[in-house]
Image 1: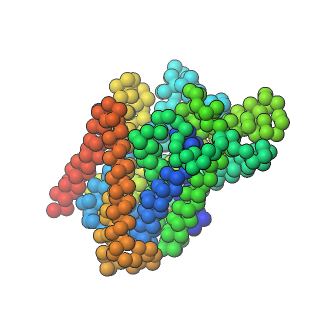
Image 2: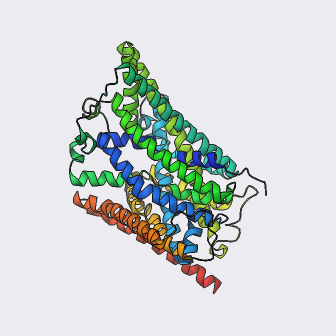
Image 3: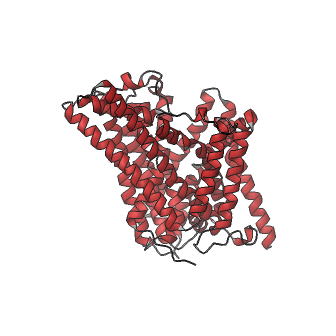
Length: 494
């Protein structure tokens, strides 16, 4: 087996930043809640992101040689069967994410090339826009699977490059916003009217309790994805030190950046003038705000309207390119880490002969290609299957909504059992007393249960009962599939 380069602290931080931080989360937050989103992002970090990161740091440092990541953490805490079910649900939700996002990545690419999303107008040898995007999605999955199967150092390069690109975008946004602020005499485009500005959304639909609660759920899950880093602990340089340190630095860094970025959108954007009409929506908000940033920059420095509009368009294009690159980094990690945790962590008897073997780069190549074939088939069915396939895709997405967050519930609930084990070395330990372990488990579990429950209840409040049904049935179906697979394994080894 070839010796791959080990991941150091800086590499891990860039991987986390590239996989978790979403520049678009700051623009969506400002769009939905204005300055009022800052407090919810900070509270979500305090009650969800920070405690779960501390838990994962303890899991990862104690089980540093475990190849199964999330599966190994759960197995060490609550046993094989529960670990298998929880990890299967987690993997299923990430596969659905890949299917849906393989199409979305072409929106920022189109913005980079054409100045706005023109994917619906694309055509090639008789294929319509949806079909062209589907073909590109299949090629995207195949190319990244091939490159990721060449070794963890290749994945680290993709993820680190993605992290640096997003960091560059944020730094550019920061510098340009400060330049506008200085040039306009430190005036905010979105004025502050006392404390109410930081607690009340400028959008009418988000001023109601239901609207605010839906944003709370959004802010919690804006921090999701840290558990995927568990799949690379065995590829780290001194993981018992690197993993906790990288997690803590990245946690503080991402929380701080979210708060600063949301506030700084108010320097260039007057919410009611720019976002109050029907021009902006959840899909294009990042490009609308970046285009406006460019326009306001040109205007502040005395350029003509034509020149300012040109700068705005350039900013939107550059943002499209960097958002495309950020997807590249996220996919590089997520094509490999969840699958590796599941296939290499679970008993080999579960799988066909050779399926769980690794190639000379230490990668489960056969399993990765099997996953790629499944994802590509789903993309092809959805892209070429017409209305029925489109409905199937919507159902699949709804089924994965709750499934994505359930593994967190497994990991957090399993934490006291993990802490109760006396046979494990604990190079890093934050929660040292039984009371602190129980308190953090209860608080984070309550946050997660609230988030999951509200995700299900919200469509019911809007009369979409079938949406709620599919959200509930999703994890049940995935769990039944997992139980059936595990039962087959038990019979095989009996």
